[in-house]
Picture 1 (cartoon, rainbow, N blue to C red):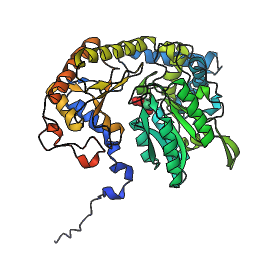
Picture 2: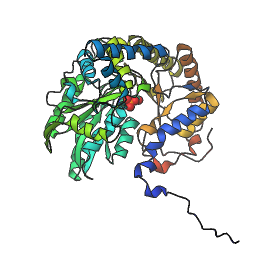
Picture 3: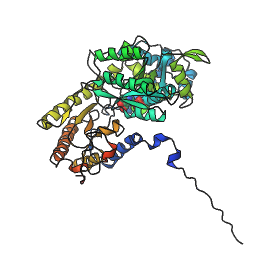
Picture 4: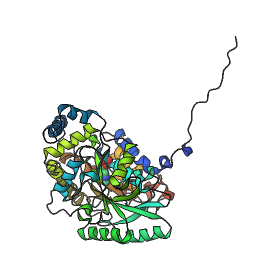
Length: 465
Ligand SMILES: Cc1ncc(COP(=O)(O)O)c(C=O)c1O
């Protein structure tokens, strides 16, 4: 008997038919950096922007859960069944710890917000996406952000189809004169600039903090130009300083600031809990006047439904265990970060002084330092550094969407011990000396000058060292 064979078409998708973000070079950054780290597990990593792991203890998670459940029972007055339901069931889209988040903001930041304007999100990342999604009404909308900027913002904007217009970064953070230039240019081109994203405290990747006078001026600009400011404060609380400048949100008198919070560095990244404070009024909705937080919550209900109540309970318990002060909760960690930062800055001084063309900034807190060098820093150099020298860093071009930053690298100080920092800096110095010893431009061969802006393209053909 003859068997008829029909041809079955196997599903195949063409990249060009998928969302444009998938083809964007920024989307590869995380994967690429993780790949290099995975391939060279023995390399000492100044790349990871992760919190310190030395104090981790699984028992803490149980304790925090317990503290939160006791709070539900004794202070909120829930029955045992209601307490169980709070953890086991779907929950309110805005979250179950908005009141504790608001208390924490009051205790640590002097920020006074009503819990109804808080949406607890799956990390700060979801908050950034929700905001940009809500603000992007049509193709003329755009958001300003300092260049270089945190890749999470760039990625969220790509997913939300929101163009990011770069603003120059000065010695202390976003350059406010350039902000006005870019704003006016964008408007002249018919763009509607919805907001400006900023990280005033210990920015990622540049590490620096915005001076108080600039904070006031930024708020004035926002009021004069009818702009929202999206303030991301992932690192600000990790400081022992008693004279920390107030956040933009604490200074804000006109609800110009949407505040983005993350518990990744102050709580634990594994919980994936962040939040947004959006107390702006939205008029003309089908329900009349509502808070921006309500509109974000509507979007969230169709994205992640609600943030895991179990994860929120762990973070809520951590807040409760420290009277809602994350500054207090992180005293030990902050000591490590500040000590590490000093050690790395001193270590760079000792190892690299006299190399006139190698410079670095000196942030007063946070996780990051930026080094500027007279040779090209690309992914090929990172791979070489890992393989030949056993040291990792983050090439800064990843924070410029590969359009600039090819002579800079970011060092993160957060995860290493004293000995690893000393050894890592020795290795880094050896890499730098090796690169400085070369003929100019020698190892620029694999660098595609056409994709880079000025300065980075002065390459001549050759081999990767
Ligand atoms: C500037 C900035 N914002 C936010 C975050 C944390 O985001 P998430 O809460 O989604 O982990 C980070 C972490 O690297 C960051 O550097």
